[in-house]
Length: 99
Image (cartoon, rainbow, N blue to C red; front, side, top):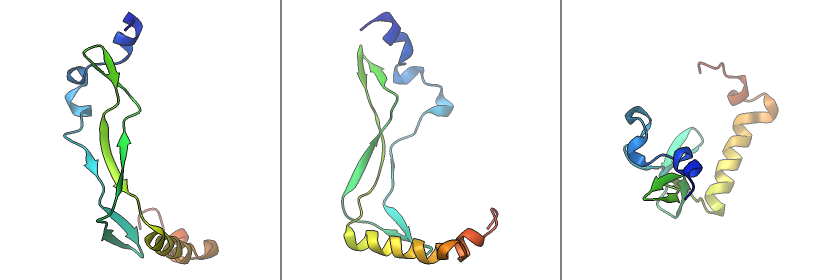
């Protein structure tokens, strides 16, 4: 590996403590009609776009995962979002930032 790459990508131990993840953030819930529902199906991995230098090899670390909803759940979420949006006049777009 070139010196440039060695300097551009840190080892995990070189990342300041306040910026390190304690572990992957695995999302098992999804929002539908204002309610968080638990997903027990397949999930997709999320890899960091920033590589880590591990013994001279650049690797992407898993930083989490998110639910891969199936058609039924996806359509329910879409319907809920459309109702909440209400052509720009629904509860969702009319809420204040604080709400």
